[in-house]
Length: 138
Image 1 (cartoon, rainbow, N blue to C red):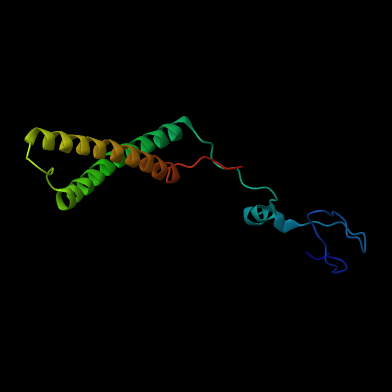
Image 2 (spheres, helix red, strand yellow; image 1 turned 90 degrees about the horizontal axis):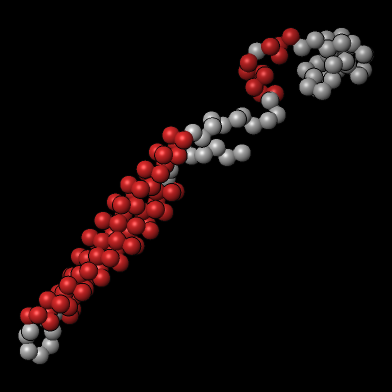
C-alpha cells in the first residue's frame, strides 16, 4: 500500500504512520473478509476430532481387517491347494486314504490360518492408511 500524501510504499501490517511524511495511515480496504484472510499469519484451525470420528475410524479398520482376513485365507488356501494338486499329488507308495485326508486337512488349516493372519495384518494396514476421517494435525 502507498501513503496517501507522499506515495511512499508502506507495509501497513506493521506501521500506522508513514515514516517519510509522518502522515497517519487509514487503510479503508481492510474491512473486507478476503483481504483479512490474506493477511492472517497463522494457520486456520482444523475441525476438532470428535468421538464419532474415532468410532467411525475404528469401525472402518475393523471391517477392512475382517475383509482382509477372509480374502487372505481364501487366496492362500486356493494357492496352496492348487500347488499341492499340481506338484505334490497323492502320498507315495500304498494309497492310504486316512494319511491323505490328514495331510490335506493339515495343509488346508495351515493355509487358512496363515492366510487369515496375513490378510488381517494387511487389512489393518490398509484400513489405518485410508481412514475416512483424519485427525487434525497441528
